[in-house]
Structures are given as structure tokens and as C-alpha cells.
Image 1 (cartoon, rainbow, N blue to C red):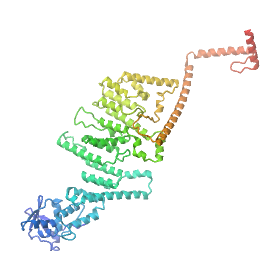
Image 2 (tube, rainbow, N blue to C red):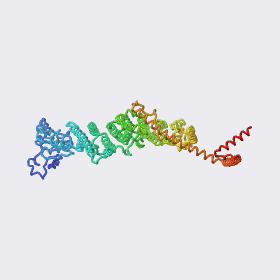
Image 3 (cartoon, rainbow, N blue to C red):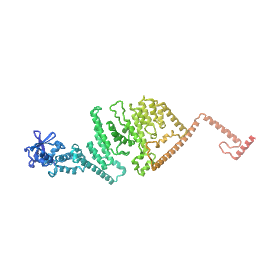
Length: 633
């Protein structure tokens, strides 16, 4: 934009700095003060001092002119301007400008020069195209129209407060970033419409982030400016997924050096407490900037989990942790085991638990207490989505509960290895899910068995209550076989397992259709219970759709039971025939039957009767009846 500086302020032997033109332009710039002209004013800024001349300074700076006029001593030769924004560097460039030297205005110094021009009052009132006008032109032409340039200049304003705020430079840059970001979003949307992208490919396009994406540049800002920028882009209508990307990128860069602690840092030391404080401030700020809570939030589960882990480790406020717990609970069906393995903040207590089970208990409770009918997204669905959700055999609500139940059983098996975990906390988590949430209890049985193995000295009452959480009717055949021989289980549970296994085998032999035997068939169908979480008011349309879905489920279940019953009857008949054929007395019975039939057939032939197995004719029937009457008489 500008030209290369052609003059310099050189430090004299005495330590002061006086202006001397460069040798390359000395003959062409005779109007500038030559080197042998002694300075008549010394400007002191922090540890630096500049030996200059009054005339070129007062010709462009209103502040220096006023200070010289207001001075009682007309021969003043020393002036302190330590409050100038940008310090000695900014004043040196401004002094060169006062001497008529063309200075280069860049992204790295425009904010500093703009604030210095305001401080020195270098306005159009004294000379045309003064430093203030020059910097304003550069801002309008180069900085404000470009997002990345605006972010770079805004970053330079962090050390120029309060002057940068007084001249409204910070707000102008923030508004420019927000406006340009929304314009870019609109242009991107129009570009996608012009290319007629299918709707299914839209999410993939939005997830792709270019390497020069402007959101990455926001990571250079301090926390205050970042909050102001994000608030501005949200108010201008930037999409939630874009805001989430910005938050994730900024949080990752801000916490990267804080989360990884030096192992040599002593727990509880001043340095450790300072690191915790920085983490706490960043996490609480990021949580306050998250989009509105929703079950279809654009914030990834892994990011929320990382925030919660950092919030617990840094002892963040209760409101911050509660907000994160609710957000995780709203989309718990998207979580994996690593997301809910949250370390406990034990502060070096060797007897503390490894994981924070209290937070997990609250998170699962939040998910189970959700009322699907009160969700705004459900009320805004169109008819096609309503038909899909209510008519399909596996509804999204039920499938989510089944996912969460498997997740909880896996989590229980993991925390069961903690020797410091109290049985009461484990039992509270095991009893959390309703009966219809678990189709099969093998996962819970495995977790309980691990806990009993790791904690062999728990009380009998706790052991009994722990095993009571397992529904023996929902155990598979392999789990029942293992439980019947498990010495860690109470005798009552072993007896109960054997009892239900005996009933199952009896029904299998008799071809019955008891509920225990058909547990595996029912497990293929989604279970629905009125005692589940959430009992809000149901509209007539929703009630009718729910009845239709349950009717289809029942019909499908009855059809499968009939098919299974038919197969069992066939098996039953074949088993009976096999038993008869394999009986030891079967051969004697067959030989006796064969001899008897031979004798009867010979007797019938003597009496002109049909043999056994053939239909008798009229003559045979007449002879037989006559002999019968004769024998009776």
C-alpha cells in the first residue's frame, strides 16, 4: 500500500535518538532537516527517548502543539508521551510521518498507527491527508472488506486498549467480521443451489472445511474479543454448525497447552492452581457460547464430553457442569463408552474413585426423564416423518433407550473394576433403567459378576440387593448356566435361575408357549411400557398412531408365536415317536402284535371274513351277526 521507509531515527552516542535522512535520498530531500541541525525537543516514551525538532511535530500533531502552548516554560525541551498506544514503535512511525517520510502501512501496524494518530491528534485540521486519514483509508480499502484481515487487525487491538475502544475501532472490526461471515454464508448457499446439489450430499459438503477457513483465524484472539465476535455472528444469523466448528477450534487451541499438565508440577501448588483457573475461565466461557440446547444439536458428543471432563478437573461452577450434563443427556444415545468415562476430581486422594459416577447418574436420569411430546422438533415435523416414526416397528424413542441401556451395562462393567467404588453407587446406576429398557440382562449380569469378583468382602445384604437388579427371566441360556455354577452369587439367585431354567425346559418339552420360553422371540420386538420415562399429554392423532403401531407389533408377534408353536408341536410328535421306538419293550410288543394279527386273519379266513385292515363285505357282516346271535342264545 505504502512505500518503503526512506529515513530512520538513529541512536546517538549519548543514548538519545535524533532524525537523520538516509544517504540515498539526502540530496533529493533538501527540505528535510539536515543532520547538523541540533534538536530542540526530546520526546521520552517508556525507556526510549527521541531528539527531534518542534516545527515538524507541531505542524501535524495537535497534542504536541497544545502541550507546548500550555507549558509555562517557553524553552521546554523535554516531553513525556509514555501513554501513546503502541509505545516507542508507534511514535517512531508517527514522527517519520511528521517529517514527511512516506511510511508503509500494513496489517501489523495499521491499528497501532490509527490509535497513535488519535492520541497525537494528527487530523485534517492541521494538514490534509494526515496520519489519521491515511490509516482510515487503509482500513476501509484493505481491512474491513476482508474477514481474515479484520481478524488480524482486531488481534493487534488487544494491546491498544482503551484508545482502540474510544475510537470505535474494535466494534467496527467485529461488525465487519460478522457481516462478511454472513455474506459468505449466503454466497455459499446460493452457489450450492446453482450447482443443484442433492439434499443427501449437503451435510457432507458442510462438514468439509477448507484449509484457509476464516474461522481458524479466530484462535489468535483473546477470550474477551472472541466472545464478542461470536456473539456478533450469532446475532447476524450464522448457522449453528458453523458456530460449533468455531467453538471447537478455539477451545482446542486454547486448552491444548493447559490440559496437558507437567508431571513435575505439584498438585495444589500456585502454578497448578493458576492452570486450573485458566482452564475454568475458558471452559465456562465456551459453555456460555454453546448453541441452544437441543436433541439435534450440532455440537458433537465428543466435544461436550471433553468440556465436562475439563470442567470437573478445573472445579468449574455448578451451573457450568449442570449445563454440560443436560446437553450430554439430551443426546446420550449418540455417546460411546469413552464419552462417559469421566475421571473424578479426587485431588490426590488415594481412596477416591476413578470415575465420577454422580455426574453419569444425573446424565442418565436426564435422558430417561425426557418427554418426547414436549420437544419442539417433534411438533414441527411434517406428516411423512410422523408416519415413519409411529408406524415403524422400531420407533426412534425405543431404539434410543435400547442403545442407552447397552451403554450403561458397558459402563457398569468398566467401573466395576474400581476397588474404591462403593456398592451403593454401583447399585444406584444398575437400578436406574426401567424394566422395558433391557431386553436381555446378560450385560448387567456380567457387570455384577465383575463387581463381586473385585469386591469379595461386601456385605451379604448389599450382595443380595446387587443381584436383585438382574432379571433372571431375561438371561440367556449361557448366562443361566454360568449363574447356576457361580459361587459369588447368593443362594437365592442361584435357586431362582434354576427355577426359571426348569420352567423354560418344561415348556420346551410340552410345546407350551409360556412367556419365559418365548422371551427370545419377544426380544426381537421393541418393548413398550407405560411406566417408561416421560408421561406428557398425548394428542388424539399421536394416540391413534401409537395404537396402530402397537397393533402391528402384536400381529407380528402373534404370527411369529404361531409359527414357533407349529414347529414345537412337530418336534413334540417326533420326540414321542422316537421315545416309543427306542423303548426296550417295543420289540416284544411288535412281535406280539404281529402274531396276534396272523391268528386273527387265519380265523377270519376260516369263517369267510375279510382279514384285518380290509373293509368287510355284506356277506361277512351277515355271517358275523348270525354267529353272534347264535352264541348269545
